[in-house]
Image 1 (cartoon, rainbow, N blue to C red):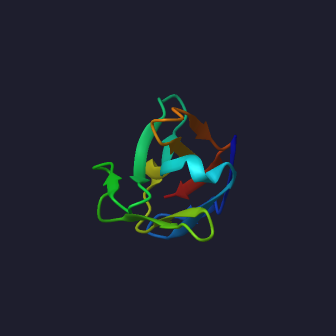
Image 2: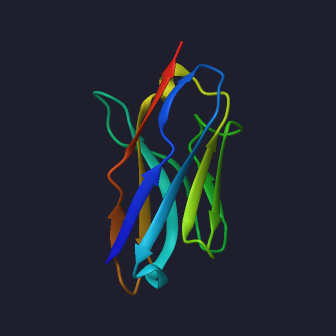
Image 3: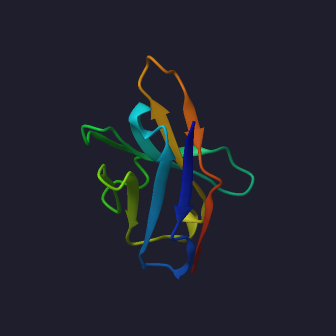
Length: 118
């Protein structure tokens, strides 16, 4: 099992910045990719950014150039630096971890709310 705990959400004005953190514990040796997804009210959960253990990254088009995902393998933590925030970035942000294919598991955190005011 893998446990994921997010932190760093909150209320920020448009144009501001926040940094989210996700600490992983448990069978962390199984983890390959980690990432962030978000779900706005009335919308489906969507990918924000992912990063593999080898630090390859993928970003949603809507956040490219504004958000940066990074990973500290020594601390088993993934970060999401969010700059130039927009009201449309308001959502619950969920941390995600995917194991190597041999284990075939996916884990989610409970989420942290980010609210961007205009």
